[in-house]
Length: 263
Length: 294
Image (cartoon, each protein chain N blue to C red):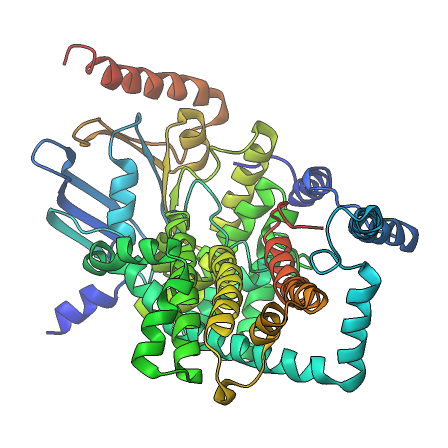
């Protein structure tokens, strides 16, 4: 009994995310995912890499609880995951601050605490003082930062856990619609926020460079059905060998894509 | 990993934010006056023009006086009614019915629209019916309403409701249909249950379409009421604008007929300008939609 309790509460032995033999089919012909196994350690930054149609978004939706797997198990050792999409998907009728406040409101957190938390989160994404702006008054990059703050706000399951350590961030190509300069800035911002919150991150992208820059681990998925092909530990890559690694992963990605030419 | 010191990144980012933020022009007093004039002058000129043509046609005496009275004769008729306060009694009779009927319509049509939009079976069952009813002139209901309820206020309200409910419900349905699919998913990801999602996401997101439905619903209420008041006459109903207009017809009194039509128009335009236009503008402005009428 105590052993089980330990396993549930011990953050070192429990993965933030454990995906076991997860499959997802949308119909008899369309198999999006096939027996995917993937673990994310607490505080780890994992990048899911793949060509279009590899089911990376599907996998993320399953982890986020927006969809159910056809087979297999997904276990989260964290609270409600924070989800970010390619579009900021801010509610256009609410100000930035109210957008961030909404998940706190939905969780039933009292007003005073909400205001304080919203301010903290906007400060975290360097948008303090811009809470009264509406989404259409913000640039694309700023909107994505509001979306990040809102996603982080949604991880508060109950009133008492304000600065939970077990935050899981699920990101679905959040920077792919941004221009190159803004993307670059937001990538370093994300690394800063990650370091500051100690969150575990599952980051979907089709950009190898981005995956290598951000991730501690890069996981390559094959396409139709999505399957884990390989993974690379990229955490301790020294800057000089980074281009080589990018080339290597690019090569593997090309192989996966070329395999579809015959079928 | 970031190689620059963090404050440099912050400054760079602040500069980027400043450059990327959409620029908004602040209107000063002079610009506002100009804008006001631009909005007010054209319709006034049009109105003056119409009255001038009318005066000219009258002066040319193409038609006999009982068919086309002079603008001043109509004004005298209106002024006399205004003087005795009769106009206000007539307006009140019609307006309170239209507003009350419209509000009941909103109360009925809103849950109906939600049901049609969100429950597939309901949509298939009564969706086409609602759209059909929307194009049926509600004056067609007057004979039935009179036979069912007699010449009573109930009959009038029934006609008004049959006119307004389909428009309001359909407006809400199309408002909900136009919600970007990402928004409900975001709601789910943020932890909204069914009810919370309806309140915090579905309804506010559907508001522009809903408002358009309300506007059309009001127009239909007002039209239906006028039709009902012209046809259904009884002391119990009192004298509304429709009855006033019908009086003009029965006494072959053209100035009364034109005065009544003018009053009906003024109410319609007034409600649009005082209620719906400002509501629509603030809703669209808040969302950064440029379709907002000036």
